[in-house]
Length: 495
Image 1 (cartoon, rainbow, N blue to C red):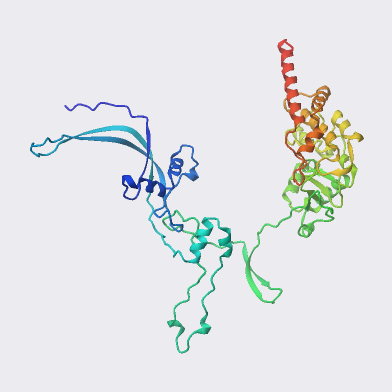
Image 2 (cartoon, rainbow, N blue to C red; image 1 turned 90 degrees about the vertical axis):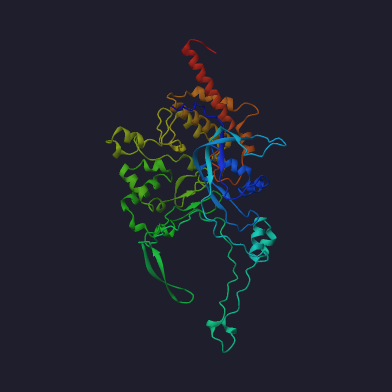
């Protein structure tokens, strides 16, 4: 009975292999590594956290040629063992008979090979232009980023036409003129060895249309996509633009008769009552079905309003012919409505009624549908007093704070953020907390105005939205202290 081989544990060392399609000797190993892209490229392919898109090793048999087509290699998983084979031969002493030499072989498993790179693609599409060819010089200049050489390149003139053909010689007997355009190869070659079925099909929405050239009067036929998207974007201006849109763009105006006239009339009436709306506050004035129709009908809103791309009224909808930069009352546009945002929603569900008030901030309730509020939609008593304070106003509208001074606008934002995040935590912030935060933010040497003057950069599109400022950071720190004190009181201790 044959004895069973002993069980031995596998070593924990991991090895990776590259099946190089060529003969490699000890002195040619550096050349093979260079043809594979270098040692760093090989290490990156076998690294565990390498993105899948980068797990590709290319072999360039002519690494010194810029026109050489590399051979793509695939990294495949394997379960191979790395063996170390040791062969020992018995030395023959001088004077002894030269009999058959019997060696001793010893095999030892030194590690596990889990990944292997294999090259199975054919080495095709190989070509090499002459070094004196203009395209070779251009490719070299592009590789070396030689701007002067690139700018000096020009396409050689085409060979002479058939007008200079020698007489009594048939044109079919003349050599075919070769183009001198010298199209260079693409930067990347396809990895697909087998041609793929393209199955080209014309767009079913395309129709043949006759187009007349205005200069020559020549009629030409071209394909036009009937379902092509037509842009109905609203008119948009920058804060620095002097003129405001007086009417919709022509493409939008042409669709006036095609939209829902009832909704258009309601939208016009809302903008007559209040010239500036945020999108949530405007949609809350309509029933859910009407709001959905407004969003689905692209030309509706562009027919009644325009937008600012930057400044304090960024992301708001402004009525045509109304310029908030010239109207100080633009900061206090109070919507004309009853205690409920819309009377015809009073019979709806409680959820729909609360959604209709999502644009209003009263300091007591909050919805998670929005975190941006117009000043006229803030009903919190403390904030309302700060908003209506005439001491914090400017004489000229500013591109960042509008009609408010930087100091007054920062105070409003500090209080609003503290009250808003307190409601998210499930509690109502008191006015005393807000006053303490304002005092902490206005400590000597840390005034909001000084900080803003250092970070203000003109030309930014998002001037009305900034990062967390020092006064807001101070508010967060003070809020953490208040929360810690509240927990201490609950535990029976006091800081």
